[in-house]
Length: 258
Image 1 (cartoon, rainbow, N blue to C red):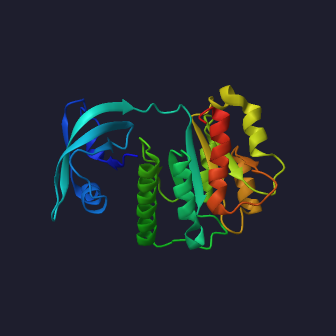
Image 2 (cartoon, rainbow, N blue to C red):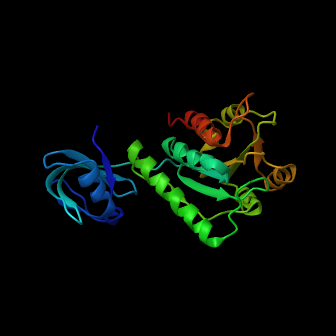
Image 3 (cartoon, rainbow, N blue to C red):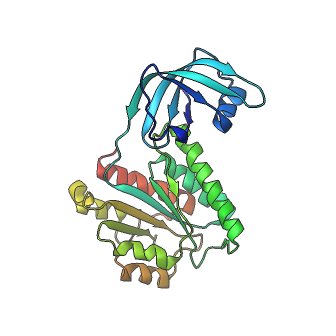
């Protein structure tokens, strides 16, 4: 299987068969030094915004600042689904929130909103720590997108408070689903009840995942007051690291993506 490398500098640039592209920077370093790319190999180059080109490497220049040249063989543009899937992931200790970000990227999420829940053990009040966390999450989405051969890399947004997250549900075209294992309404029944046509009324579906100790009653009430719906995935209690992937799998099936 060919490897995928990203160059966001290609966004908006013409990419046609026969054109020669040059990849530099960290992506080129990984390709040349780690993956040991050689002339004659075929790989993919993506612009992170929907286009992926199949290219043939024509020249590899190792050294302190490695790079490679490649000829474009073909280009495909992946059309955006009309409904964007959004993960609102609470901060969780032990790297489980990072695992959720990785898995949800593999399962097709389009945007990621970290939020600071009342029961989050990790709070990250320091702005420098928040910026570091957001940078790390964005790197995780990029690497997971490459592994999955995704044409677009999910965007990681700023840290949200419970109130900011709840306010998203006020938009009539945004469906906010709060995952809570103690609810009676199942996610699958909610999505099937709306149907594929009903779901397409929304431009965004947001899955709010809580921290280790769960979402508090006051937070659930806050979300409900703004129009969010609390649902459960099933009878078993899922950890924060796996709840998002499970919800996205159900949603992808309901939307006809899978």
